[in-house]
Image (cartoon, rainbow, N blue to C red):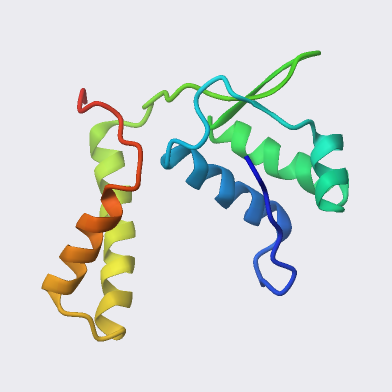
Length: 131
């Protein structure tokens, strides 16, 4: 996986890294148990403070997206849907409300939004519908 930093972004670097990794997992570009670069290696490659990379990895590990194996490295975690269906639906609805509000303000029609969502959905890696 290739990380990139947007220096002009208002988003802190550790959040940029987290967002990129979340998207890579969602799109199937990285798989569970894939090894990620070490903190030192990635900080050198991106020319950023190692604490920045460590913070991104720590937050993603807290979220359950990554796991560390002492002496072996940092790996993409297997998905563990620990949240109840109701909580997951509430979070999705909150995200959808924000997304749809923005789409309305940008002047899109409902059919345009549905078309674009359908097109973009094909670009993501979905888990089997077992919940």
